[in-house]
Image (cartoon, rainbow, N blue to C red; front, side, top):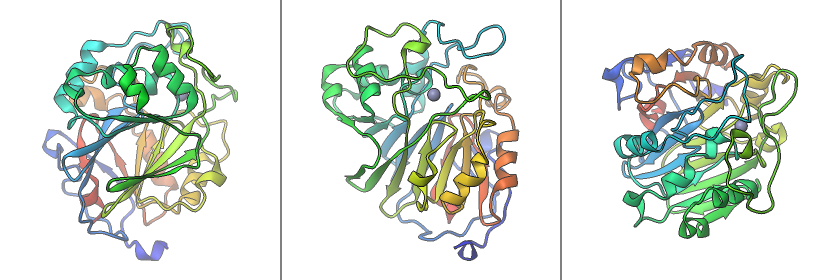
Length: 332
Ligand SMILES: [Zn+2]
């Protein structure tokens, strides 16, 4: 498999505003099965594990769109589940209006935690998107949390509840859902575990948005690449074993409790040609800050770690907040 991918190993940084929209300016192309792709696909990093995937220039899918970037840590820097849920409605609206391509067809949710789900109700309620059908794909717990957060009824009717194992056909692309696992802290613990079988009272703290079941997704575009999307730094190896995404977004939060997280993931997925670290920013610096200020929140260690572990046929792209990368060009 690797022999068909005669490419260079290295970190590609989308540097400076000149690279905006073009993504891999000046980078040597990779060689990839299926490439060149007739259908263009762009990926815009929204911070944390959030992505906008734009298909053919005018259709889009959102994954874990979290834009509020609310405070989450106590004085020692540890996640504090008792902190108030403070969605930044002004920022969410400004970013959605100013940066997103338009109403998404789908919103894929990896799990119920605040940094993945908290802004979904506001996005679904945007008046600018009212005339468009938006389906939300999530597990039962996230569905109940969306109800508890006041998501409009019409949008709740368009929730597609999934458990992992589904392989869904949409017009022009498929979405495969995988049972996955949440990141574990260094002491093997989990942040805000739990599930809901009915809508709880309205969530008020970070910890009220419980994990539910963590899912991973593979979006495969007809005439375009397949993209693995992960919202947490762990996975069920036997669930992903044998998939062959062209692009893997890899959550790079703490994974010191896991045995060879990166190596096992790359092996199970067949050494995807394009690897993109995410969930490695500070989660709080506002997305309205300058690219340089935002870049300072994403340590290079995540990309370096992937580069050290990846096959010679893979390349690592360190994403910039809100910058669209033409991934079809990067793979061609
Ligand atoms: Zn989480």
